[in-house]
Image 1: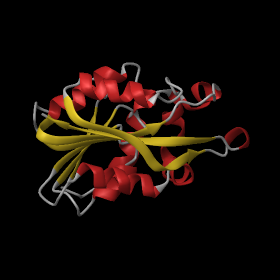
Image 2 (image 1 turned 135 degrees about the horizontal axis):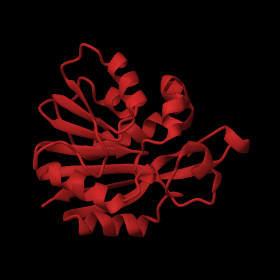
Image 3 (image 1 turned 45 degrees about the vertical axis):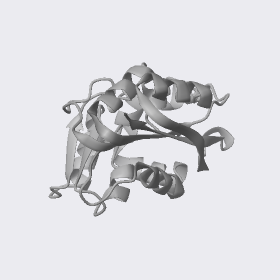
Image 4 (image 1 turned 180 degrees about the vertical axis):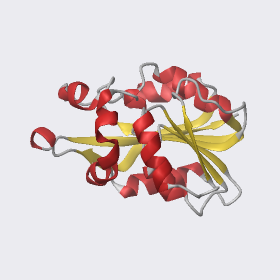
Length: 204
C-alpha cells in the first residue's frame, strides 16, 4: 500500500478517486458496519480519506491507518483541526491500536495492495471489540496485469470464496461476501472496469 504510485498521486488523489470509486460503495460499507455516533472506527488503508469523509459526523472517532507518507500528509491537510479524526502512519499488517479497541474496522480498495492479506485481516479482527464488524470493499478477480505496473497493485483482485475463507480463519462469524453494488473504473488504457465485492464478518 505504500508504493511509488501513491507518493506520485497523493496531491491529486481525491480527483482520481472521484473518477474510480462509486460513493454508493462507501455508503454500502458504512451501512454494513452498523456504526453510530458513539462508535470508534478504524479505516485501514485510508488514503486521503475517502471513507473517512463518509463517516464524519456519524461516529465518535475515526482512526485513519495509512502507510504512505504523502497520502497521510494530504489527509492531514484535509482533516486539520478535527478531533474526531486521528491519522496513524502504519501498514495494515501492523496496526498500532490495542486489542479490542474499536467497534468497526473498514478497508476500502486497500487489500489488493497488501502483500499478506490474511495477516492484515487478522490484524483488523484483532482490534475489533466483541460483536464488532470488519467490512472490506475491494476488487473482484480481474485480468488487467497492467494494474500491477501502473498502480502498484500486488493482487489482481480476489476470488470471493478466498475472501470468505480468510475472514473465517481470522475468527469472524456470520460472514457475508456479496456484490457491493458498484464498480471500480479507470480511464487508463481504454477504461478498464472491475466489479467490487463487499465482505463483512462479526467478531465472536
